[in-house]
Length: 370
Image (cartoon, rainbow, N blue to C red; front, side, top):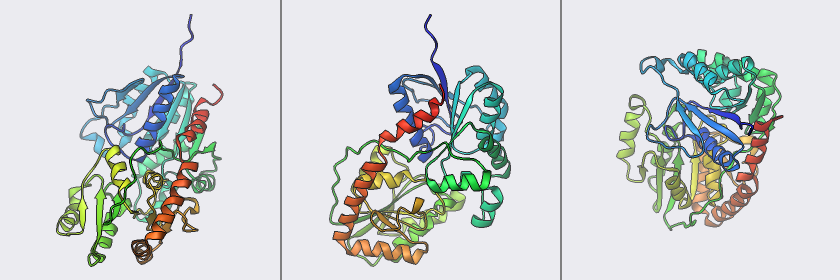
């Protein structure tokens, strides 16, 4: 009698067919690698799923939520989520996207001889609620943070994206990281072709932590420059928060917002760009950095400097104030040879550090002692 494959359950708030963010994309690339290897019977549980999506090589299950209660947070999904896990009976749970799901996964794993691998997706995940409120004036809802922290403390294996996240994990929660695994992407297949008009792009979803208003301010401040255009890509965000900003964008002749795009279209646009700008307050490790570097695009940030990567200016720049960020962008606009040199260096770095081979280390942690 053939021994059954071990069961691996991906547990995220969203499937990439429902909401396509950085954590969902990394889960997608990892999942594709695991399906190729055919070692596990794989399930993917998420609240947000495109009902028309047809998975290949794994089973996808929607976590049903009452449309009124779901506004309160993910914690309301506890009873149905635990029942779903019990029915699947996974040997390993891979959880990414810090919410109360992190805590529920740990609760289930401890009582059913399963292993929980929690993959930290943002610096937010390893900063306590009080510190987030003090440092950044906002946080995830208190109950989500507290339930999630139970999972952070109880997970069998913890994976971070950066050394900084590992240090925060140790100092704030007393946990040692199992592995640091850098985000990874497949090699690009677009033709990298830069037109004469300098294209400066911003790729993110409109929400407070991403600070889209800074990029709009940048485009407005540089309206006088000829042969320079600005482009924003991502979900439009809450109308009540960003309606006025979108109206402002619509009135500008050097800035265009094209909304949410497919991954292939995002990569194609990045390949044609000259500079990628990141205005986030806090990040994990942005996938857009890797997408840009692989396509010879320098990155300029308004403060995000994962593990000090921008300290030497070889693959881009970090300005911790708006004026410094704008200064670096002006430098790149005015100096073509600098843009080209940084683009070449950035691509070499990404091809060395962020390819799909990083998945091997992550899969090794998922296997554990299996």
